[in-house]
Image 1 (cartoon, helix red, strand yellow):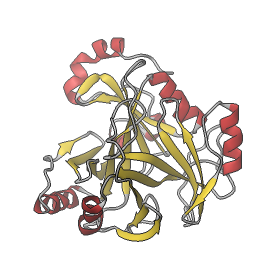
Image 2 (cartoon, rainbow, N blue to C red; image 1 turned 90 degrees about the vertical axis):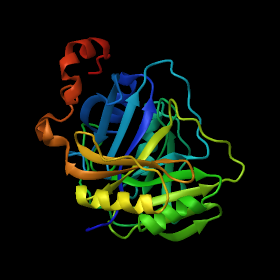
Image 3 (cartoon, rainbow, N blue to C red; image 1 turned 45 degrees about the vertical axis):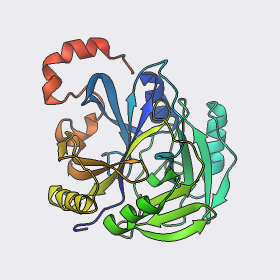
Length: 312
């Protein structure tokens, strides 16, 4: 694990109505709501985190719910366009039944790279996939009253980037992050790291004429890659700088430490540490129950609580 990118850490997207977002991911999809906090740069906006029991890297989907009525985003080039979750083999038909019951928009199951998958949209139009992974996935699922272990998500399987030209992005993945190109299906290229068993895949779809995407409601804001600790994080900063790319200083995000840079294809990448984790300000059994504020906003708690819409 030393000095390696350990697959995906988290993925962050934009949502509209906060309660609708909370209800969909915690109730219909059955993820654990592990943190309710605010956007560091816009404390009047929630920052939600969903994942497994402890918020393991590779399971964390986060949202900035900007509010009802915000402009709709557009999937396109220069952005992450699909988020793939690993689910048990044989579970897709049960998910189809569940999506029918809750009026979730979906496509019929299909197959790609020898794996069955089910594409669906969340209420804001974010595109996701449930994938019966060809590789063994023994990650412990979070279970709810309705979503049991036989169908529950295990965490991320892959993320898909849509690009006009994949050359520069592929170089970042292979030469800096240590991924390898292992498969191709027409214009979809699969890159995999052998540093971890799961959440290890980045797919690139190359569409030369695709219009630039627009980040707003129902789109991915950024993709975060995982490293073990701060020392490894800063070694990767040196690698990114050496490659001639602009990258931020280290930023403390309360639950992990981060660097941000825009890769040559236009996607915002983050590199994030495992430490300190989500139990730094809440007990494991209490994750997601209280509004946790960054220290600089604690003095504004009453104001922010009055502004932020209740969700549960």
